[in-house]
Structures are given as structure tokens and as C-alpha cells.
Length: 172
Image (cartoon, rainbow, N blue to C red):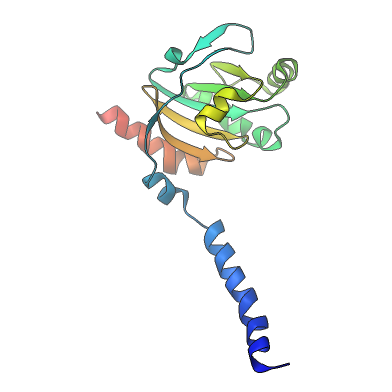
């Protein structure tokens, strides 16, 4: 083997490792620093109980949580959402590409931390919002999306990302 091929065999895996390490370790706080607030999409859908819901019902400070009965990670984050709900955090579910029967059975089995869950069986509202999958969480303040977390909502993300935004809004 010539010298340059040996060099490539050694250096290439190292460069790949460095690249993926940097990509995987991007700090969500840094991403949030560049997050631009946007108005929540206008919609008219039903909740999981068949009652009409419109975008005007999302005033104040709300956590929108995208979830589905088929989502394993949604089950992992569910106890933390329940804890938030018990501490008077207003959480609205966005049931994503699911069956209303399965979703209601899932809530019956695991508990319901949501004020209500918007039923989005085709994912139209989720698409307008920019959802890439479940779970995702959005922080709304006066119908503006001011924060977004992809993946599991947990204590660390809540305290480091969403809680400071809520505290800042409450000081105004």
C-alpha cells in the first residue's frame, strides 16, 4: 500500500467521527437562541371527543404536545407531561396521524394530562406547524410559537428551554 492510501484509511474514520460527534452534540439551547417566533397556524379541527376546536382557543401560555398512540417515545415522556399538568401547566395535545379510538383508549389507559387533544388524523395541522414526527413540543405564548423541542420532553429540556421563556413572558 502506498503512503497516501494508509493516511486516508487512518484519517477518514477520524474525520467522520468528528463530524458526527459535532452534529449529535449540537446544544438545543444554541438552536433556540436562533428560533424565530411565528404565529400558530390557523385551523378548524375537532378534539378527540368530537368537539370543534379553532386556533383562537390557544390564547395565553400553552404547551402544545404532538403525540400518538403508536409513538413509543410519547409513552416515555407521558409521566413528565402528567407532572407538568398536575403543576398547572396548560398542555394541549395534538394527536398526530392516529385513530381516535386508539388515541382515546391510550389516554384512558395511561392518563390524560391534556386540557384537550386536537385530532389531526391526516397530519394537516402538524404539517403547517412543521412537525417532523412525534413527539414534539411547542411553547405558545399568546398564539405565537416561541419555542420548539423535537423528541422527548423532560425535566432538563423544560427547565433549560421552555421555563425561561415562560418566566420572561410573565415578567412583561
